[in-house]
Amino acid sequence: MALILRNGRVIDGTGAPGRQADVLIRGGLIAEIGVVGEVAGAPEIDCAGMAVAPGFIDVHSHGDQEVLQHLSNKIQQGVTTEIVGNCGFSLFPTRPNPDGERMTGELFDGEPREGMATAADYFAAIKQAGTYVNVAALTGHGPLRIWGMHMRAGSPQPEEQAAMERALDACLETGSIGLSTGLNCMPSSFADTEELVGYGRILRQHNAFYTTHMRDYKFRVVEAVDEALEVGRRAQFPVQISHLQVVGQKNWHKLETVIEHIEAARREGIDVAMDAYPYLAGSCSLIQLLPAWCQDGGVSGLLARLESPADFDRIARETEDGMSNGWDDIVICKIAPGADATLMGRSIARIAAERNHPSAVTALHLIREQQGGVWIISFNNHDGNLRKVLAHPLTSIITDGMVVEGISHPRTFGTYPKLLGEFVREKGWFTLEEAVRKSSGQPAERFQLRGRGTLAPGQAADIVVFDPATIGSDGDYQHPARAPRGIQQVLVNGRFAIRDGALTDEKAGAALVHAG
Image 1 (tube, rainbow, N blue to C red):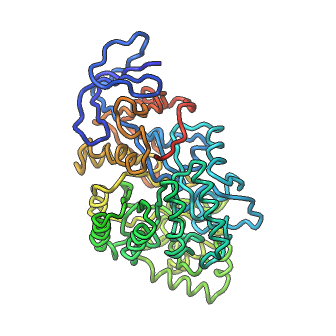
Image 2 (cartoon, rainbow, N blue to C red):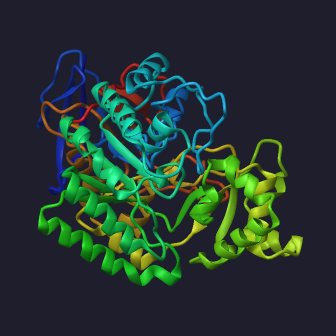
Image 3 (cartoon, one colour):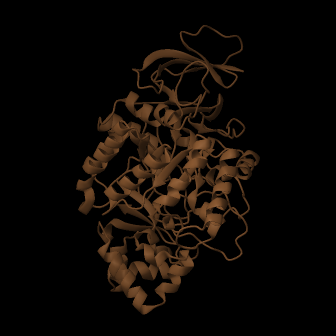
């Protein structure tokens, strides 16, 4: 079936100036761009005054479960492809977990139940469930390490390393596009540089990627960047530095050094790039603010230590010493089911004042009360640094978002409309063409998502039509799930997922995406 988008301003995702043109779609592909004549039986949509752009590609998503649940938060903001499995967390490879081992910072709480041995199992679940968006997937280092050596600290034994390499190879063989690490969460953080380099042989065989949530984004952020670059240098695979930022006012000045090191590595020949989201706050487990040693053994190990007065005092002291911003910048956004709902949306500092305890002590009390299930929104960046990272030529735009039972980060619902409204139209940080390229063509090229990311004949018809004069997001940190403004049409492989501003129930159009 053919379709014509008439009279829009085509912004093709390459960064080239937009131009007035029609777009002919046939068989899920773009057939022609220019002055398109009448096509018998082809419906037409008048896009006058609208921008016609490639669907946005979110290369750092935590929507692993959302695509299985058919949630619409990504398609409603114009995302047509996302890469899941980031920060060392993925739903595979897993096998039965009778001991209930929990990674610190665990995103998915063991759901769906363990038993996805390879990427093939995950993709089969996606195919059965249907999804609005195209999906590519990374293999998380956390479940990979549990696969090979459970939650044990230290370096793997040769047989354990071999088991992890076999599991990684099987995942890559069945469609995963790379390995992600979350080096500030257990058990991924147990890995030393040698272990990470050791995966290079497998990744190179599959022309796969290495993405990294680094060990630190605060006081040792420069050292963490240097480790990521050293891994890329020695292992000879592409390195993607996830959600680059420098956390906390005490460290903001280090961004220049971080960027200098990345640029020097590029000149040296290391294949490195980065991504970032257009918000000043991040979101993570409250446990991630704690010192690494106390997380040995995962959540159960941490909770046991919090029962020891001596360990509790040490953890509180070291947590306070490790803070790079204030406790009033740390806001509760998710707690355990059935817990005190009045905690939601309030800062640790405020809760501590009401309880008449120091903030670090209160944070540990909350972790113990919620059995580790406390998530936060952390205000840790500023406009100057955010602009430098977003505008850098190596940066792709991401959401880094996921829907939580609580107050989700607004990036989960409004990243790309916010970028195009606030940062293009209102602040003028980018041209429309630059912002679209950073959200489509550039991430597609970076992750070798062939046939996607730009508008050209032969490319997949993943297209978003939006109003540049009104696009934006009204979501905030208290009311994040407000629907974006200005998105008129979204097509995935030529099929409408959003039509005339309304969500359809089209699930069959999405595809599983492989790199290369």
